[in-house]
Length: 303
Image 1 (cartoon, rainbow, N blue to C red):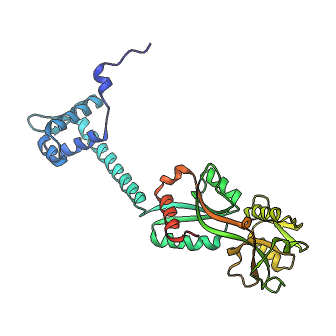
Image 2 (image 1 turned 135 degrees about the horizontal axis):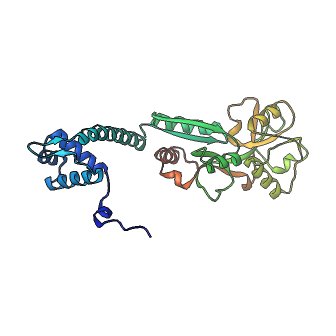
């Protein structure tokens, strides 16, 4: 059985930052009373801190008579104490900069850059000290990145929130039929899912939310388009459609800005989905993450 420590040793907190600050203040002020005044504490409090530090170091640090002076051990400790306190001050300045968003880093995953880049631009304009990086992927892959802490926040299309994450709905999107600009359906405002029957259809990869929502729409309408082949990612889908390989589905905003394509809304409530900001619950306490979510909600929340 281990020998019990004396009562005084059990009470002794060891070398503390408060004691080091007091020791440096005493040396710089030249007396206990002036140090107490500078620190805004009582002289007995200063005496207790110095006595506790000397106990923890097990050597005297100050000579009290005929005048206050450093021992050899005290001179050595003074250099180290000043170094420690300077490093701590740098750390506190750095933490304050992170807390107030004057500096920091944020990693954002994107399942679609079209809307997200506008949102990111607004955030960086408000917080120019934040260094922001992005990763592109489909929703399934990016949720994995968030779960493994490789991405702080993912902006992804989802049919509904997923468990195990903080999911903040930012914007509503709808499934659309994407066709070449000269296609017979290009001039329509909307089409029923049955209009896809018999058309050469290009499917999306497993794990794509676009594919999941499309399958839900087709099941509700009782149609089952047979994909001619599958592509990975919306850009591959666009290029395949432009090349004349068939028609496909995208969310309505994803064809914007591409004059080669037309997006025609697919009718039915099953085609609705949302763009969500997804993060780990514990990441919400990171100042840059919280500020990014607040920015999205304040400036860009959809209907």
